[in-house]
Amino acid sequence: MSNHNVLVKVLLVLIWMIVRNVGEDLTRQTEFEGKEKYLRKMMATISMLSTRQIRRTDEDECLTCRSTSNCCGGCACIHGLCKLNRTCICDADWFGDSCDFHILSDSFYVPSNDPRIRTIKRMEQTYGFMRNFSQLTLDLNRLQHRRGCASPDFKVLMVKMESRGFGSWVHHMQGAMSSALTSNSTLVLRYPYDYFLHDGCAPKTNEELQFENCACYFEPLFSGLLFTDESQCKEAKALSSFWRNYLPPEFISDRYGFSAGILWWNIALIQYLLAPNHRLETMISRYKTIMGWGRDPVIGVHVRRGDACAGWRNGKMHHAELMPKSFCLDVEKDVVPAIKLFSRVYSTKSVFISTDDPNVLTEIRNNPSIHAQLSEVQWMGVDVKRNFLQSDTNYDLAMRIGVLDRRLAADSALLDLFLLRECDYLILQLSGEFSRLALELNIASKGYLPPFISLDTYSWAPRYGLAHVSEWWVNQSAYTLEDLVKHKEKGEI
Image 1: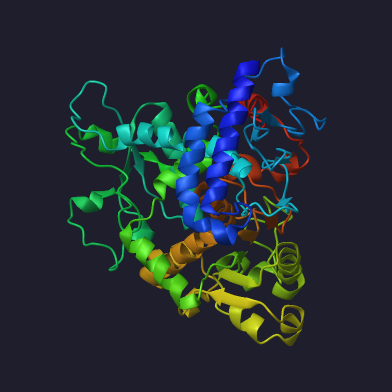
Image 2: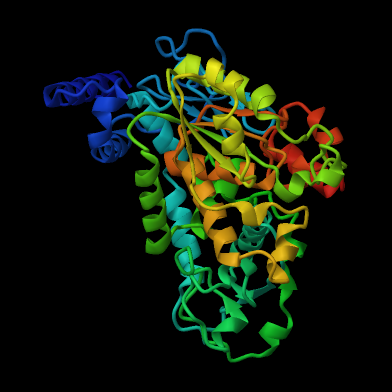
């Protein structure tokens, strides 16, 4: 062990000399961005060769820090694994430099040290969290893009599309994808989805209209399929039947590592489902250029109003009966204090507003009180005509009956969502599907948890399975995946 420690120290000193000679200060994000890909790859190699993952044993307490006491030369690893170079690799669903933030029970994360400043230890922590995303992608590709479908083990999970808001649709799809993977089946979608059925998408033949491949905005969900059995289509399951499929399978830690938990499983599947194609990537890049999106860090704010806060609801969200703490946001009263907090802690002046209410940006620009409080802030938003969203009618219903322009609705929603993915700090309402999806995509894109505030005080939770039993959920302390499985088997979730 002593020889191994000496070798590790020598390797780390050599690596530090290389990095220093390149002239990069790894604690400064502005000088680091250009070499991030190279260093990420380098750190992956370092991790495998020199600072290998130490198995958790009771024989050497110094290598498995699980308290705030000084251990491994000062590694405070509260819910994680302390490696030989004093990096804390967090347990499933725990985040932070010391693994002290629990995503399932905490509703805000505002660390004093900005996570976007990528030090070597933080990069290795990111690698520990994301290293098995590629393995899950390979497992899904094996099922979704297989060849030779006549093989005896070929199974199809046929799912019938339903009219849903985009956030709700994605989270139901994640449940269907989870079910398909655990049953070793290929997920196939029967009938088109409303958001992908407009003149901006490639024309489809009558045969192609029988299935949905999501290729209008994303990489194709499946390919190489030969349907010789019509009974597969007749036995299609409703998408709504997958709303409870949010827990990962029992084999998750054995196959994907101990950092893979409930959040990891959900965001890995969603990242696979929502891999932007060239059309969507071009649209995102174009709007970032138009808005003047530069190198400075950006605060992303989601303000949900529209049909969710229709006038006849008297200021209550549409799901208030399930989540009583949710409410319709007042920008000056609710959002501005959160922006001021992030601006003060992280010294950022750029704010992106994502909203389905065309009046929000006008309200901000014409309010002298907001300008007095945030005089140096640069406000950004997707500049599309959103008057088509000014309706108390449910958007999905309006889309189906032709009152709402499908292309404008889909383009604006996806631009908002993926621009929130690009933000460095988030102000959300995690009682809502769209806010949860924005946080999930942001984590999947960055590989670490960004600072965020949930204004309605709900923590992240996967779909209705946890978040929508609020009175039960809010009063629970942090617990393990095994506890969640037990609650689900008892019918309590």
